[in-house]
Amino acid sequence: MKKLNMFSYFDWERFAEKKRFVSTGIQPWKDFESGEVIGTKVEAVIAQDGTSYGNKEGEIISNIYEKLTFKVPKKIDIPMNVEIRPVNVEATVYGDYRNQLSITAEDVEVIGK
Image (cartoon, rainbow, N blue to C red):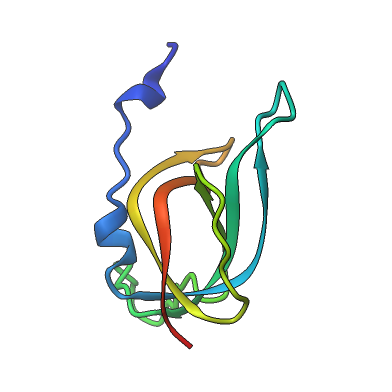
């Protein structure tokens, strides 16, 4: 079957609600084909993860210290090592094992150090 991912929905709000994201760097976001800069990639790490993943007895599951990249369609400057919050996120799960996350945000706000 083709294009099944069009019907997948990733609940970003629920995923992010008990997490803290800390910036680790920025770089230009370039169009794959033209090489033209179309925005900024904000790299971050999950610094705190209080999400319950339905762990079974004795099982510990967490995404703490996992890396994320927020693609923002404008030029922004975010300092390193500050707490950030992405604004108006659209996220899509992809990959052979459905374990990768593509994240686009309208903006990224600095909310603390």
